[in-house]
Image 1 (cartoon, rainbow, N blue to C red):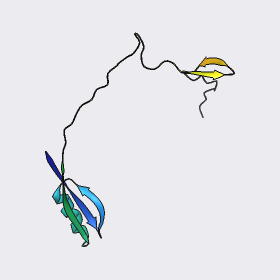
Image 2: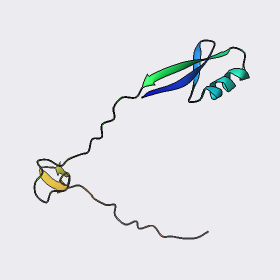
Image 3: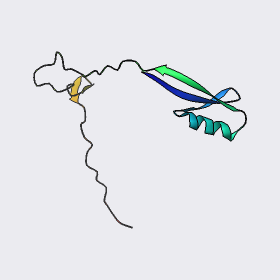
Image 4: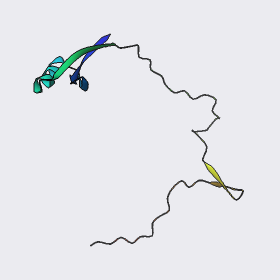
Length: 91
């Protein structure tokens, strides 16, 4: 399937791409030194790709929890922030 669009130029510099020729003509009518050019491109075949789960251990969901090493000791990474000790007040 072939598609087309119009590029608007001012003094040789592209300033806009338009999906409709009338929009390109409208932009060109605003200033005398503007021109527009029709561009065509072909739409290629679209291939849908879905992710598949392969070579995953039974019961495993995604990656295992992260671990960090501190002075040779392996610790779990923090999963949530601690509760704040701030006092709520109204002004």
